[in-house]
Image (cartoon, rainbow over all chains, first blue to last red; front, side, top):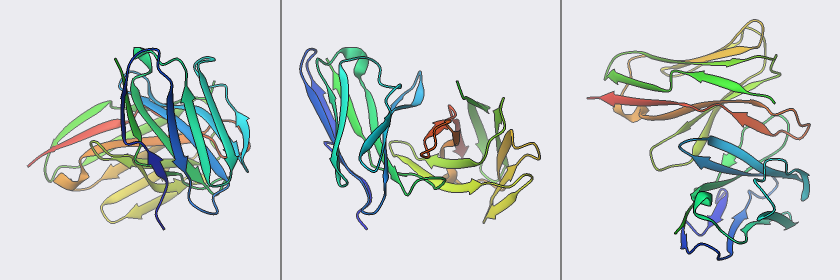
Length: 113
Length: 112
């Protein structure tokens, strides 16, 4: 089991550029979650999917953020345009649903300069 | 919205001392989960508690769920340097699909 795979591990981009973060959940897990982690705000839920369908995106900061899950084995989180305040570690996690523990990916450390 | 509060924010202990972190919710939780995040790492699932008053042990770690299912604690006996990291509790976020709301975590440092 390869676990939850995220790419890239690190991303440094200039303000205004588009950023795409990728996630491959564990095969068989039907729920996928995107979290953002900062020192100030901790772990914040951005959006989550169940069976590839977005269930709740109320945590998405603003319209610059969008997420898709075109199939059970792939999800993306896109920021366009990126801003310095988007700098954080973005985690993807998957689970078997209610109520089981999450398996987190290694995260993408995003720096917007 | 749903929140889980964790205290303390930081804890510094000497190796061999005990450590406890507490998690509180204003509402009854159907379950509570605990995670550990090593420095530079990602959160790793430790355990889930479901029953009122439940106590579970994992080696030197003891997890408790309050009788009212509004609070929980994690106790580590005789800390080791390998225990260093941030411990998070997480409760259901109100959705029906298993989303979690995480506490801010307790960062544990252990002095050898």
